[in-house]
Length: 120
Image (cartoon, rainbow, N blue to C red):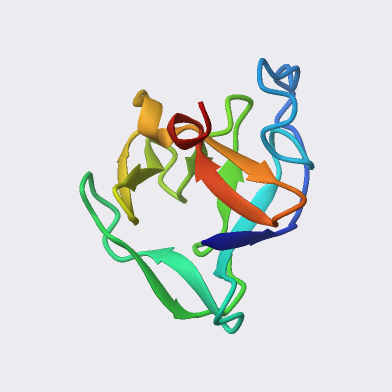
C-alpha cells in the first residue's frame, strides 16, 4: 500500500473539470509523491522512462522527476507526459496512459492509492 503526499497544484489553462472529481483531493494539475506507508523516507520513482519500465522505491529527494502529475482522469503522469503509472498485479510500472490500469484514485481515510480497477 502506498500513500500520497500533497504537492503543488496548478493548471495549464485547460479545463480542470474532472469526470472523476474524487479521484484525488487536490484535483487535476496537482503533483504527488507516492510514498510507501512503511518507509516514509522512500518514494516511487521511474527506474527507466520507457514503456514497461519499473517504478522503483528509492530515497526521496523531493524533485520534479520523482513527482507524478495528476490529470483529470486520475492518471499519474511521469516527467515524460506520455508515460503513466500503471498497476501491474502488486507492482507499479510505466506504460501508455490510455490503459484502464493507469486510472488511480486516492482513499483519504486509508491514505492509500489504488487503481480504479481494484475498487470497482
